[in-house]
Image (tube, rainbow, N blue to C red; front, top):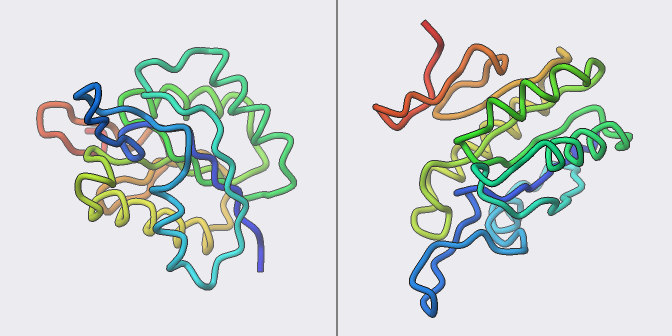
Length: 165
């Protein structure tokens, strides 16, 4: 079974409420994705918790680290948990440099720790798609669709990802 590299960069998917500060924070762990992976019995993976940021805080140095990690891995298939606000920016950056792997970004609009459904559905969909996909490229998988990164976009008015056009 081919191993999939799972890179956890933070984002809303991972956010948890800090009752002492009264705000949602991106923790320095992978508890949310690990909770889902416990049920992925037929999956060979390597989980790397990498950046731990809201995607609005990500910068070019973070994207360079993401790129370096993808390129350094022997895994040909990669799933990246990423915040939805700049997922497209990071995907476009990787598309400039990664030509020989299957890389799929996903995330959630609602934190896993507030409601597990969306985060679990998005991650499970992307994981299954990545396992069966043999076409190299950079993809985004959200809200029931997996498509090339430049085909899906975040419709901020509707609060969903949908096809361009």
